Amino acid sequence: MPSSKKNQIRKHIRDRYAGIAKSGGSCGCASGCCQPDSLLNPGASAQIGYSKEELAAVPEGANLGLGCGNPQAIAALQPGETVVDLGCGGGFDCFLAARRVGKKGRAIGVDMTPEMIHKARENAAKGKIKNVDFRLGEIEHLPVADGIADVILSNCVINLSPDKPQVFAEAARVLKSGGRLAISDVVAIAPIPAKVKKNLQAHSGCIAGSATVPETEKMLKKAGFSHIRIRVNAQSHLFIKDWFPGSGAERHVRSATIEAIKKGSRP
Image (cartoon, rainbow, N blue to C red; front, side):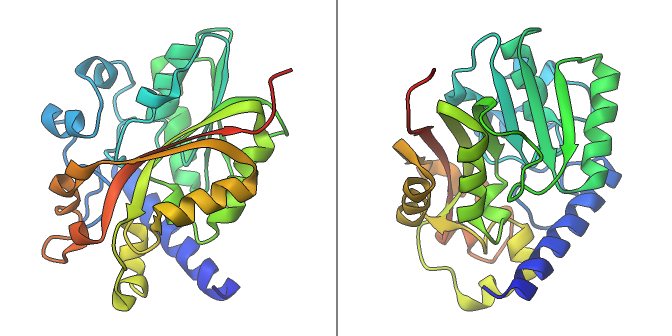
């Protein structure tokens, strides 16, 4: 993909999610990788894997309804661990991770949208959560030092990147040897029509940029990951159909959990 096209996609995604941050609502749009009204409809949040307890544990305004699964459920977070969240949005998954790793651990959230980082920091102050750190940056160029993370989380964000191999390479760089990936994202289960791939709304809506399971496995292996496990949620068409009503998006993509371990043993 030409760099000009990549930049066009990034700008569109940044502008769209800036608007969501400013509106303070879940999506507020006709399309997107989100569960509309997730704060008001516990059933919708449960559908993508969050419990009522988790939803009640974060500051108000942190859950923007932009996920497609619950990476916490596969992360097996332990007290004292350092977690990095790729595309942290309003901080929702970071705050849940911060609870699990405790005062001796920390959660670092990275997002390329200044408005999202501002919102996440406001939410942290509102909730008096000290063991979180929100940083402005692209997930292809993480503002995080080498080898400091035990776990990398991400929720419905990597599909948005026009340079996924670089995202996984960066994930490997910041993870410790033996560190873990715990990702919820969207994968393609059928060829995505050319007209959809050209549609910027379909890119920011988590459809057009989706990679297949074999493509994702190949990228992870090349980046230095092993023990790769990708599980497709066969029932996710039930909520994906609402992202682009009438478009048939549910015929082309599904949500999935992606787990992997950085090669090497822990020190």
